[in-house]
Image 1 (cartoon, one colour):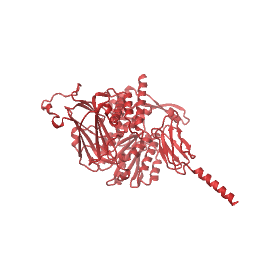
Image 2: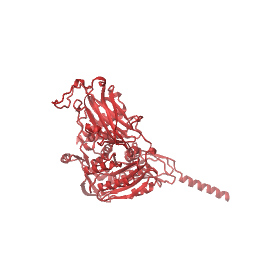
Image 3: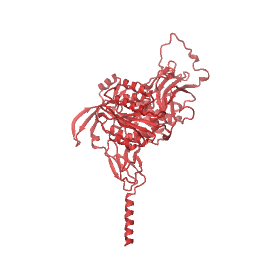
Image 4: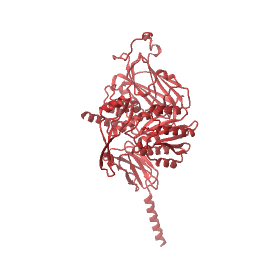
Length: 625
């Protein structure tokens, strides 16, 4: 009898252990019904806290806890899928668009009159969507509301400048990359972006390039390359890159962070506050015990919902975020002032003191003008508190306001269109997003007229500086965070080219002996790059310069760095329908990007190649209509 009972007990225990045993790691792919991979899908084990995200190829990998019984797959615009684990190590999932998502937004072309009116106000406004509303049973109610009021600062493209009349080109660096993810959002929605939403330097700076790590006294390295220009073989293309020193997360100084979260009524849609909550959950997971976080929210008024809390109290921080609900108007100015006050109260000397503002930028109560916001953040940055801006949503996003706040607040601006982008900005680029290595970084390039006849800076239209500003330490410029890349491209017309050069009338009171220009030991140099920067805690700038000489490479000799950056520039010029696009086509941009893709662990370059192909097809369809 005892033997029988022992055998039964062993069998029961064995069954129990088998039923609760789950694979150490589960992998799989998530696709749509057509078999296309779905990036940015949140994969969450329940019960438990294990999470993962699909990459650009739809692949995920997750290690659930012993108590986990199922995986939940969720993505904005798609019906959530739940799969039982049941000892499986491979779980592939197909997700279908949610019923309302398929019907609820119908896109219309922007009327020419609206475009002209917005241009006359110095702002580009995206094409209005006609929102069709449905009741709880998904029945069409018949009401249509034009609600799109997206705002972008006008971009007037840089033209060619004569080296004889304008030998210096001066601008502030820009590490923002919001324009690229915003463009991606438009194309994925089946729309080409408005021209002023396309900032080519931000598109290029979205990508990492193979620049050397700095090894000297300066916190960044300088990379240069000269080659034949892909869209005009009579011109040259200059590639300049900076690479900031990479710092391990564990070595970063302690952070005093204030989350400034917009919970106004305009943030109620699924791609705003719900996405914001998930995005900040990723950041909270990165916090260390030495870090601390406070949370300020604003709607009709501003309020403190979480006092400064150590980073190891993650459940308390996440509970405060999870309890947020959207409603009311938008007192952005009041929220900013309260956030700065909280940051100053908990200031860490020698640490990273920063506000992270998450909003659609639609401030409509209190101080909301661009000038007022600019003065506020300029005042506070001098006190050592910087600001990072994360943009969310569509329809009423105020890109121009958010860019100003980040630029003047010694921070950076990113647009979060999905959870994968949130992971890139807040996890993979955690150090660069939150820790400044060098501030007020300025470029100045002097061209040699014996080598270069004229030049054009591609992008950076909103970052141009007067030549005199380069040596003026009072003039604000951009910041570089740990591990950041900054890339700039110049299109150059070589000396002696049979092209009309922009010129001015001969000077009456000053004479210049052009025969002596560039002679002597400098005759082989094409240009000299000068960079000024301040240390993160310094007030006096440091000068770094580098002369560029040597042979101009043929197209096939250029590195993947130059060729891929050129492909991104071509894509941007085509989206803007630039007068400087030369022989660029979507086909040539796609081929150039494909042939220079290089190492692409995260699939970002492959994703851009798909975006170029999609934009080409959209352009063809638009031309047929």
